Image (tube, rainbow, N blue to C red; front, side, top):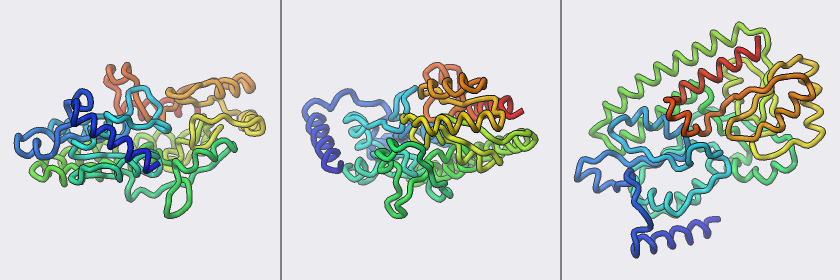
Length: 324
């Protein structure tokens, strides 16, 4: 894998020298240009939550480029040569970590941009160990495996508002490191959104604590942090990987659980196929609904003004309706 990224980088740099390696992304300004011309920081983010958090903390001091396109499921996404060329000119790179971006380590090792400020936004978050429900998921273990512990962790840390607050804090520190002249600006933005995250956390507590049911069925186990924060129990049709299919034994197990516990709603994700959730709903008389892991927003959602806070509140309404 490291050899692959090295070859990719060399090829892209060669193309860049000869023909500019394609169009220059407007956000991809190098650090020297920013410092000498007073330009905004060029910030690259790995996928949507990191993009949203960086945009909120960075405000009008940053240009943020999101690497994973809108509406794309990020788990198995791979960066292109253009993405890597952009990172060579960026000031800051923000990624979630916890195994979400299986490509990040190899790409970072291949870069020649030694001035790049890199932040793993999930740093200092207490991680939850993941589970597997299908043998095909074993092929994905290396994508989420912690090299030091030999364990696989749930990377969806941002689905707890208080974890998202920690991630914003890490992002704030990275932006201040890259742009110390605007440290107070980033700090003020962080305090603003940290307060909003405290309020969102309280909304979830007040709403979910009063509901009689605590069991949710989800297409894959992306909601461990949300459930741990608010006393819910998630039952994933599959484990951490959204692109695997459950075997017949797991399907039967879930169907029995739905019937026994009178579960009313089977949740699926907007970026993944609803077919498995629909099959279980058909077999049990339950309904289906979206519960978003906020891994990526569609162009339509972004045009409507949706962001992390909006989708989290949509999730809260969906949970409230399902657990009445």
